[in-house]
Amino acid sequence: MINGLGPRLRSVLKGLGVFIGGAALAASIYVGAVALFLYHECDEFDETPHVANSRGDVVWGHLRACKVLIETDDSFVVMRMKNQWSFFPEKTLIGYEPRYDGKLVLRWIDDKTLSVDLGNVFWVSSSRIDKVKDIDIVYRYTLFPTVQGQ
Image (cartoon, rainbow, N blue to C red; front, side, top):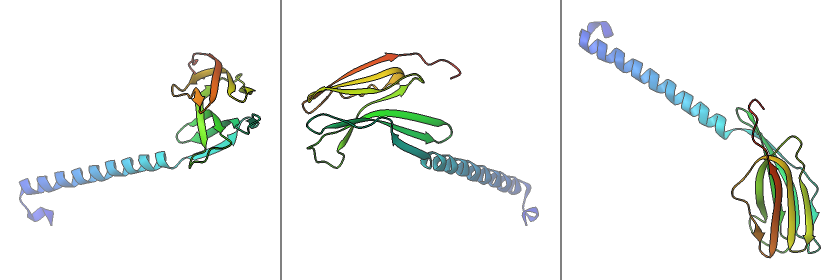
């Protein structure tokens, strides 16, 4: 059918077909990338036992391991206040990446002071929480640079 048309119109129609095919391919790649990003497997578990003060406020280490294109491990320190009702009763105090020899130590100094020793870490989040209601949180860690190839 395209052979009965003039050469200029045939050229325009072929170009339009190539454009539409290229756009469909680009859209397919985009949709696939978005689907891959949105669909990922994550496993979550507690890294440390829950440690409570005498009022019943609880803190623990939490790990989220996800696999999208690469594996990522995100570690957090989480707190739940005893007498706090809300839709999100757990607060993430700090996120960090422990070094392979790092060890998290959580200790209540008293009911209003929490000591969080992250050990050896590659990074810590800049959005850490230093106070929750009347509880002061003290952090200790040793920051190591990321070694290329690890």
